[in-house]
Image (cartoon, helix red, strand yellow):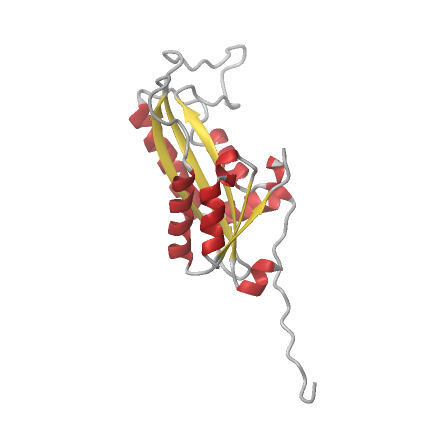
Length: 205
């Protein structure tokens, strides 16, 4: 009701990490021969992606994302998104969507920082709603990660972190070009967005 009253986009956010170890998926092989993907072993080279699935009734859904490359050296540098990274991603979405945003995300500590809460309080185009704890099934962005892992990343032996980045970006661009996939992620949660009916008062009322 909040989104409909404001003409806002309902925006679901989530983040995920991807490493050099390939995602395993079903594939074809000769009878009696188990398919094997050989990799060099574990790697500290990883990518994190924060993604926004954006919905408004009557409009095609949108996917907006921000990648972050990090190398897991203990005690050196940050391996996750800061609240300012989330803020910048949300601002970017606001500019692209040209509409208010009702942001729905989980209870990650970074999402609840004083800086993030203050930013939302200072900008009337942004409303934040928190998902219940341990409810990833209510977030359509989880469906995007599933599409990547079961599709472009499945059974791929990455040669280096640049190869991983290319495949990730290729998969995300494909999802962006196919709004029916983003809609399918929402359908998978069991949630529905509907128009809020507008009533016009009669004369004399």
